[in-house]
Image (cartoon, rainbow, N blue to C red; front, side, top):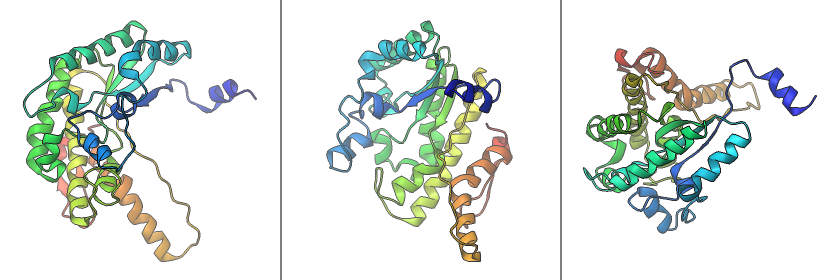
Length: 270
């Protein structure tokens, strides 16, 4: 069986293949982002201008089109749009609109991601998603601005990339800025980023474009049938997937032993 035939047989009718990349991957870390400082502190390789997409996006979209791909997810980097609190960069806004316009002309549907692990420095210095007001005030204001500014060119929205990984990598595993290892901070940020994702989805839906979630998938293979092993797996899945799924589906957010947050307005957010 050829790979093309295998693809046709294994994937359901209407399934859409696409590509995706973060702003840091394809443009390099924004100078006013927490990731830029993280790189220069020696915590990650210097991303420079990424893969050069910022200047070669037209060529890249032509390559995607030549391969028969019609959907691409990209990040509109908050730290480039609003490098200083309350100050938006019109040149950057125009640049991103040019990217989305070029994609449309080449029949590439763009799914816009608003948060792919990086934050503006000013937002991070205010505490990032450790602080509830940062979510309810600054994050949601940014969501509204992006929807208004790019809604005519976006084919769809993907508010937060891999919501289920952010808190763990940034507040438990030293992997992303701020590089903390604190269970209570992890619980708080996990709750806040889940709510930020669902609240953004509800708002972005208002312009009539589809909204999609993205989960990082890490499955476990149990090596024995011991009760303790199954309990560990249950806790792992609750922390990584079930919390977000239950919030997005039912409007109930349960993180660890924290009191459940009841948000019926977020039920069916995706």
